[in-house]
Image 1 (cartoon, rainbow, N blue to C red):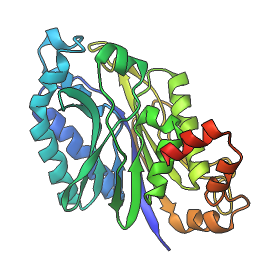
Image 2: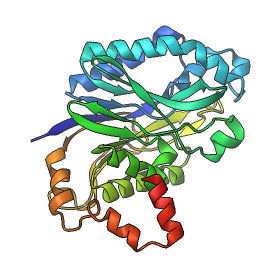
Image 3: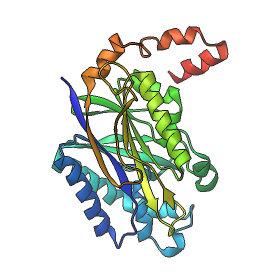
Length: 299
């Protein structure tokens, strides 16, 4: 039996007194999840933006000015998460944040394991807010990572709403799709939730959804954020009939810790009531030439 214990954070934004307060908060969260036996810890999209509270007040609502200012925290941010992953022997998908890259700023989620920094995944599809108001640029390429012998990939928020991106990750070996999100309304949360469930259905894999929680009128960047942590799977043999493996409370901060039985999803891929994963290529033959070109480009 292959079981991966995951922890999805419904992480609350707070106004912090200083870097030490931030470090202590992250230390508590990682220790809590590790203490519950979690092997893969997932923080939400833009969770580190509570660090905006440490910037001068004039930058709290300055969407362009805060981006370069936040870079000063990056070395300590990386060192903190690397140390905690090593100390607790866990894999951590850190909250994503704007990172200077190639003359622009991307939305980047770093991944740390017991051996140190494993790499990062940049968000590929920008929401209107990111593109039009914040000038965050899309990254490029998908990457897969390992946690306790299980391969996973990351689809940051809006990325989860595009089938071909998750398919690329699954084709690269991902059996778990990690979805860190920041959504300012229930409608936005629902889009990401439905997208995550659809990607789990299509890939016959697990999806782990970690949302940001915020009531932060002191910064326009993450003023409002809502959601509930969730873990989803294809509704098939041995798995929940509604596709929901576990779910946290609405706007309820904390970890959602649950076991992912990989034997179940592996069996569904080869002997489920339906065989979405096996039939993904056959589906291409039913598509129009234009649709096929688009799907093949994403594969």
